[in-house]
Image (cartoon, rainbow, N blue to C red):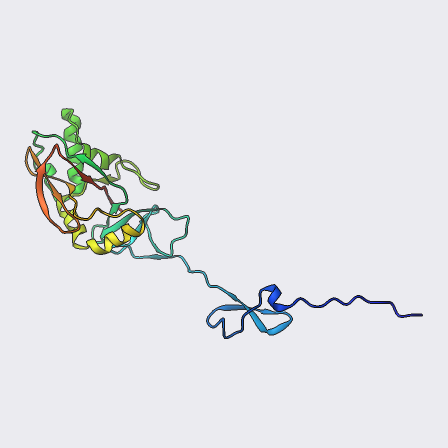
Length: 225
């Protein structure tokens, strides 16, 4: 009997399947070899691995209170670290407000080196005496993913000085996130000076003055993490 006819199909070409490189082209990368020609390969690009790192000055702090290299897209940045010893980070957001309580003296409780302590004293005095302190209140009510109202505070003058001493690296990170500290502008501290004035500082230069408390000055919250 006559032999049965057979259909012949040409094998797919390597370049049509994406195997367009040589092993030399893919040096240092994983490769897939073309099944039809071992001299043709496809480079498998190595993805950067997300890594937890030490939260050093200038590192971005995420909503889980950790710092990363190559953070995944799902990670939410909330602040930039400026003090590693006390684990302090400055918020990405800011506003302009009065310090408040003009003509009232809180005293030593609002004149410490701890912004957290100062802010608590300011708020307690305001609640007891029915007085508004907009800058401290804004920081106290500020929240992000992973943080709550009450976690953030108005930094002390000394804490702003620490931020200023490492301003370049800190603001570089903030700038990458689209949230830079405004160059040449004053920011309120929580450090009361007297019944009329409170401390403010220019982070980009370190310039410090005591300013009238009913004036509107920039405010950026701080977090102890």
